[in-house]
Length: 231
Image 1 (cartoon, rainbow, N blue to C red):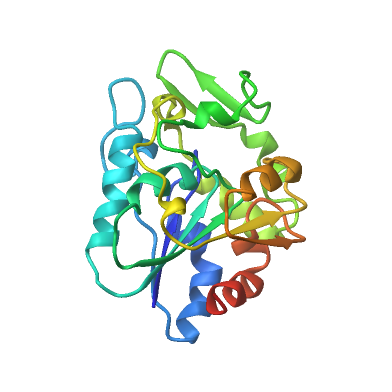
Image 2 (image 1 turned 90 degrees about the vertical axis):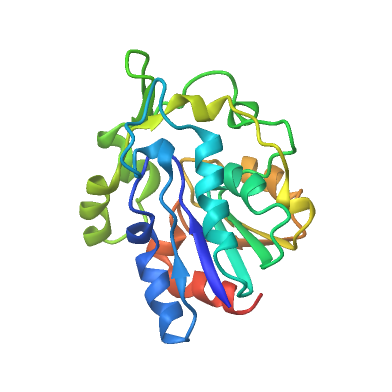
């Protein structure tokens, strides 16, 4: 088994966000990889107006999934669920999807379909550049309040401006309808409210609730490892 981790919006270096859980999986002989998302500026092309969007993110993740025939668990975090819905569709090696505080879109839905029409207070959109990002002053209290001081201090270095185009671009498939899916509801999440997560989780075959904030793979890595090893 291998694990492919698809990170959320407005961050870069997925391997950093994933590193604590990845290290514990390695100890059990389970490798993992975290593809770069072009819309976050991770592949050399600038994010923003005219730059890569959701289709490029889907293609990047799909290529990683197709690179190996090894049985694969895809762990999609937050916006990563939008990417994974299309990227994992029809890939025979994908045995399970794990959605963490994430979205399970139907084909034709976009990220904007899950919002209330207004910008989240912890995000900052820049119409001139066509990007959005996390307000640094709200990063810890919104997303990392249950993490230790080391993770909180390092996380700011792994934020990214992301193309706002991804919020309105629809997915072309819904892999969670084809593949066994587990949803991890993070009950202390201040970014995606738990009641919304539970609504999203109704589309999954299995739901697990964790007393954790938005990034349980940083704050509770052993718990996330155990969930993955027991699928």
